[in-house]
Image (cartoon, rainbow, N blue to C red; front, side, top):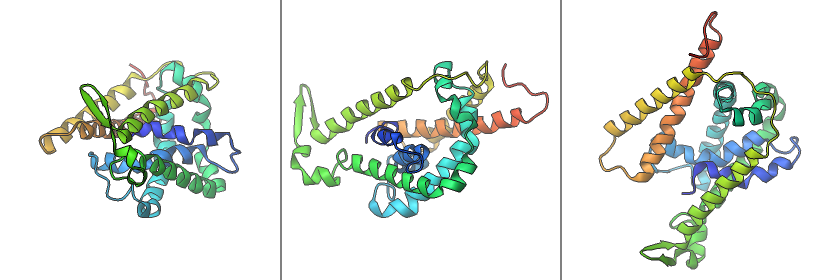
Length: 250
């Protein structure tokens, strides 16, 4: 599959449209939501999210939930502890009132989620074995040789589009105008807690999982564990922030 976080590249151009028509949160979250079934299972196994019939009953509510978890729990904790280069570019998001925005733009957010989800499924239709466009165009199943390796064209498209998507996302972030930083000092505690939790979750997954893990399942498990770490780290950060006399650094 194309790397999950390359998928926003396909919807980023829509960010130039008026906020009355699109939600950047909805577009980006929707574009990565179908892969969250992998992260929930901690293995590359999709029974719902990558099928058309799973769009409304699985992907849409899951994507909406991810929007709320990100904005209400993870966002400010993560932004305040990003490296300076990233923090100054995402600083305006720190004070964004998600609840107020959702109350007045909920329909735009839902539509944007659907657009993002659709873009993900469309992209994957060119890059998965027996996917719609792969079966429609036999050339995508033909092999291209690069001694001593041989790949199908849909695999070539999968990996090359992943790289292109990452470059597009990276350049988009780089071109964001810098703003005053959110905090003068990053909290070491946040990253220590997030990292330790991620390592613990990943270790438990390996110990309790089946033997002979595929590389793809290892990568998915690492991403899943990292997300759990970020959530727990964010809870920890918010608890320190609201505790009198607490410190958010070492």
